[in-house]
Amino acid sequence: MMPFDYFDPRTLDEAVALLHAADGQASLLAGGTDLLVQMREHVRRPARVIDLKKIPGMDDFVYDAKDGLLLGALVTTRQVETSPVTLRHYAGLAKAATDFASIQVRHRATVAGNVCRASPSADTLPPLIADGAVLRIRGSAGERRCAVQDFCTGPGRTTLAPDEIVTHIEIPPPPPRTGKAYIKHGRRAQMELATVGAAVRLTLAGDGRVADLAIVLAAVAPTPLRAVQAEAELRGWAPTPQRLAEAAQAASDESRPIGDVRGSADYRREMVRVLTRRALEQALQQATQGACEDTGAHA
Ligand SMILES: Cc1cc2nc3c(=O)[nH]c(=O)nc-3n(C[C@H](O)[C@H](O)[C@H](O)COP(=O)(O)OP(=O)(O)OC[C@H]3O[C@@H](n4cnc5c(N)ncnc54)[C@H](O)[C@@H]3O)c2cc1C
Image 1: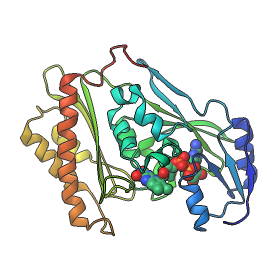
Image 2 (image 1 turned 180 degrees about the horizontal axis):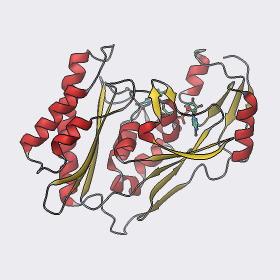
Image 3 (image 1 turned 180 degrees about the vertical axis):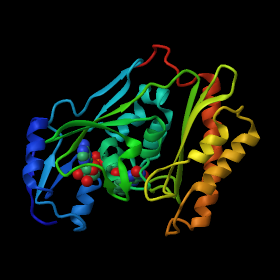
């Protein structure tokens, strides 16, 4: 690993000033499960490493039935995996965190770090996009908000300026009669990146038709892919088995996978069809049971 200067600022303003002064030569450190690996492999050689752990508010984990969930940048995948709030209201995100890496990695890896890494196979991105999550970002020019859907611009690339920090992730509360699912397929169950991932959020209208839905795919395009044509197959329609199958096929048709060591492009397209259909079925079942609804009985 190349030598670097280490900073542990006590305020957000101090962290932003340190980033700004480094002129693109600094890296933020959260859990370090991506950054430290990249530094050891000389993929990244930051002159400064700026640790976020001593900044107040970065570990916020707040749920409110009206505003939804607020996750500070230091919230780990393990916290999301085990929280009664996420298990009940954000089942897709909780499942993505459960299927993530190993328990040791999950205790360190943050959700915000996973988002900022912007890997096409990142597990938390599809459910966050399906949930309509928004990032709060602070930089020397002030604060801005960015939908997670618009954040990734390519593999490892985001809209973040060199002096910007993601401080929080805001996730809206689920409407009544909503179900959520995330299904990851890899070559093995643990310690594996997704060959394909599929997240679904589905809301039923009072008459049983699909009022709204989102289908978001991992590892089949340079950035997480919102399967808009598949969504159009279902929105406003009764979710019959045939409609679900047609939507799953549409998702497969609009996916843009490459072939690599984890699977060929054809195999990934077929897995998109299979996983999307299963995720739709799971989300539909939850929506029918009102599983994500707020009864006031949460931690
Ligand atoms: C063995 C192993 C298995 C893994 N398995 C999986 C897996 O199954 N699924 C999966 O999706 N990923 C997996 N990963 C990848 C990794 O764990 C995640 O991407 C992790 O969530 C990154 O979070 P972190 O807190 O460790 O981030 P760090 O490594 O600290 O940072 C990651 C990147 O984001 C930047 N960053 C971090 N926080 C912020 C912030 N608040 N604002 C702006 N930039 C920030 C950093 O500068 C860095 O560029 C695995 C990694 C390892 C080592």
